[in-house]
Amino acid sequence: MDLYFHTLPNGIKLVHLESTSQVAHCGFFINTGSRDEELNEHGMAHFIEHLIFKGTSKRKAFHILSRMEDVGGEVNAYTTKEETCVHTSFLVDYYDRALELIADIFFHSTFPEKAIETEREVILDEINSYKDSPSEQICDDFEDQVFFDHPLGRNILGAPACLQSINRELILSFIQRCYNTDQMVLTSVGNISFPKIKHMFEKYFQDIPSNHRKVKRLPFSNYQVSNKEFVFDTNQVHVTLGGMAYNLADDRRMALHLLTNILAGPGMISRLNLALREKYGYSYNVESNFSPFTDSGIFSVYFSTDKDYVSKCLDVVYSEFLKLQNNLLGDIQLKKAKQQIIGQLAISFESLENQMLSIGKSYLVYGKVDSMETIYKKIESITAAQLRDIANDILQRDKLSSLIFK
Image (cartoon, rainbow, N blue to C red; front, side):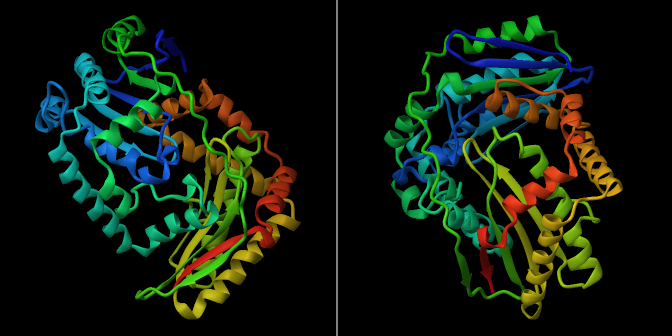
């Protein structure tokens, strides 16, 4: 994987991967998300992600959307706890159009008052739609429970009361503080030479005024085990349990990803899927998740079940935890587990869009991008003893919190 890099004097970075496809993919990443909000700004990062499509100094909302769609392209965006990204896919003939549009919406948005009012209602409706889905709401509520009274725990969509008070002045203040040029990366995967895209990159991004980050993120260090139950008018009981995990800089991160995959990854042969669904028929849906952040992380297991099976499901989950804590995986088991996650990654990277997003996130966080061969070697180097040690560190019952919607 031959990557090309360039950094402008204002700190904005470019990383480019040449491909032979006639479809190109670009993403603009900012190392800013919901955890960077002040308490009165809850929901701001996601709100801005919506609003940058609503008008610039030279385009109205329709012209922003039609700019790429008129040539068959697509534009999308997302906000996480720690990043915001706008990405677009298009035929390679329209590289200049794509980069010019990205620069326009990020640096020349006008945030019209009418659009703020309209989009506020859209996001409030989005929040209400999540409340209609307990399986989604419980994940957000569990993060709030684990990261209690900390920005990492807050729902990315925001709180209605805060959203009602957000105005144009607060938006511009947040952008000035958090949209820092030394925390921005433009990522490209496409059939274009590096000199050509470098020229376009400089044309549209080098005149952006330098604005380097001065405010440090508030670290989280006050985890308290807690167990909560809430009554919901649903046919099933929804359960999430988990606790603290490793951050993005921790060398054990890859091994925990592997352990998470073994427990209840996307494969049908994961341990909890085989036990809860195939063996006992207690649960149709079970999954595990590990989300690392800059200075912290969270591990969780989620399942839904009939109210009569909750205790039995929990017994099965804790039993599988104990097996991983007390027993080493055999050579064949470990080999299969590694082959499975390597295969999943390989299939994911068949998508050039997924490659672009992965490269952008990696360069944003680490300032480097590991090749797939390097990632595979890291996975292959994981030992059964490391997995057992991590299971004893992360899966200890007295370290785990739980949240139940019943």
